[in-house]
Length: 316
Image 1 (tube, rainbow, N blue to C red):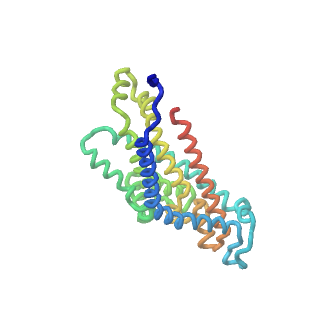
Image 2: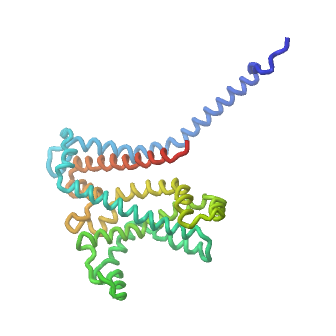
Image 3: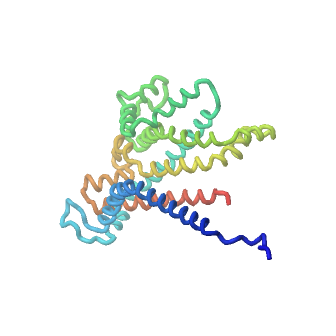
């Protein structure tokens, strides 16, 4: 009686031994991988986890070094203070407004630059290198640079406006609310537009040229090609850039601190500036911890929204 050809024979001793050996090697590789990343994980836990839990602990306790006793359980009183403090809600509005405006401006200009740099032209390499220089400048340096440039007496901005006979040539930029926000947005955009351009240019490079050639043969206009081909295919890179820039803008501190320190008055105060004031000016670590936790939760919500967008856009 012959064996049926459609029924597989049971594995022999050699096949079982080879399979056990393969599983053993996989377990060894997995253990080796864990050993390799363990030091990094430990360092990250020490750097991130401890301050995180320390802030959470502070947010539920009375840790005001200017008003002892310290360490008493405060419950949710520090979080309730977020809604009773007359500075928190305006700072939240300022932060959201700045995030929306800055990310919109930087995305539009960064996309335009990326589209221009994706086309071949003489000297493209030099232009690419030059346009990415602002992104390499430390934020503190660029903020100090723009603060000097917006100086009403010796600043370069007013000098150029006066030379071109344009309005606002004698403006004291950092002395009023709207002009101060304008200066902050310009300084922030100057440094971060190159980042958007880098990410979007990388996304453009992976789009095959055959698609554009087919669209050209079909008679599609430049706008139709951009709207129906380039933009949908660029969405993964665009969303990655938006995630980083939105979180970075929402947690902005150094540019505002250096240029205006939240002034004039509190008209340019953002949440991170308020958090700095609670920790290092008022020494109220309980309230500062509550602001830090609130910032973390809002940042996680923003990230979750983008993750949801990623899931929606992914093909089934």
